Amino acid sequence: MDDLGEGLDGVGLQEPDGNLNTRFGRPGQAPRYSDLEWGHELYCFGHLIQAGVAQIRTRGGGVLARTALRAADHVCDMFGADGNGICGHPEIETALAELARATAESRYLEQARLLVERRGHGTLPDIEFGRPYYQDDHPVREADVLRGHAVRVLYLAAGATDVAVETGDTELLAAVERQWEATVARRTYITGGMGAHHRDESFGDDYVLPPTPAARPTRTASGTSRSLRPTHWPARAGTSWHGPSA
Image 1 (cartoon, rainbow, N blue to C red):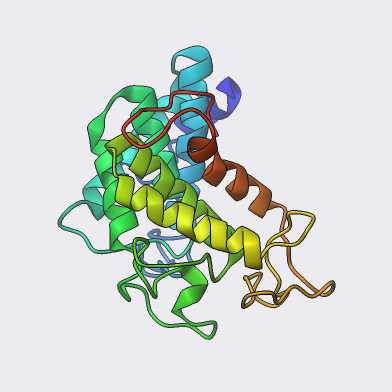
Image 2 (cartoon, helix red, strand yellow):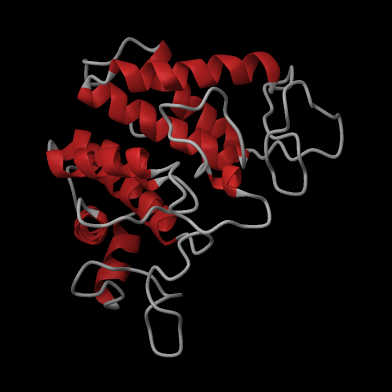
């Protein structure tokens, strides 16, 4: 991890404003955040930030952690209260909440909250799979079941749960629990697999669980464990959880 951090720092990939992406914003490329529905820019930041959180928790910090902090500050600057964008693939939400826990910096938790609340209002363009694919059809608080791309919605549920627990938002936590219970009862394989549709790796309708072909991507296991963590472990809304990094 130290070698990776030193490499990022040494070659100067991170821009002065904290942006770190080699696909957008450079000569001959599309502008930054011009493809939020498919570009995965914030999603990639989320994984970078979680790696930084791991370094903070295990080593107290380092180059990778500093890189992640600059990236998180960049996200807050670009997508704060005056912004209106969200990522087509949730992940940044739970990463920012984790960073807030690790640093006691409330700015990151507030940014995670903003991104959770912003989703579900038709912010992203419609696509061939429809807005449910990336959960931009109904606000998190109003949805009754997990739907759309299985990994996306589980990561969103994890982020919403983190925000609810850290802010004491019992209404938001109850909404995620309602969706989770309905999904486990009606849209989950007996093996625990999630994602009935092979084409778009999405949940099917209630009780649509074909044996094959089905997606059931392994990343849903990560999303499942993240979503379950604050709900079924000791922490509840109003009580911070400071366990191992996700």
